[in-house]
Amino acid sequence: MSETADLEALRREKRAILEEEQRLKALLALEKTTADGKAERLNAERALRQRHRAKTLHRQQQYKDSLDEVMKEEALALKTKHDVVGNARAAFQA
Image (tube, rainbow, N blue to C red; front, side, top):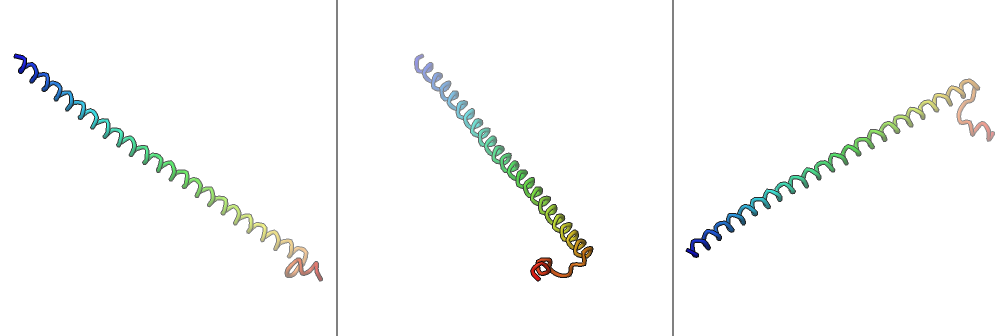
């Protein structure tokens, strides 16, 4: 009788070990999925920040280019208005 009881106890213990292994495998898979998801989320956030920075830099460059163009046009208009020909520094040095 004790042999049967011991055998049944070993079966229950084996079943418990298998269930624990399955639970641990599931936890490991979940952890891996979570880690992969976190890495993907961090990559997406970094890419978003890079896009925003590139957009800002592009707008800044456009503004600078526009400002340079306006300054050139104003300088040309002043030169034309005051009949200044050539380089203004050359006129003052003469």
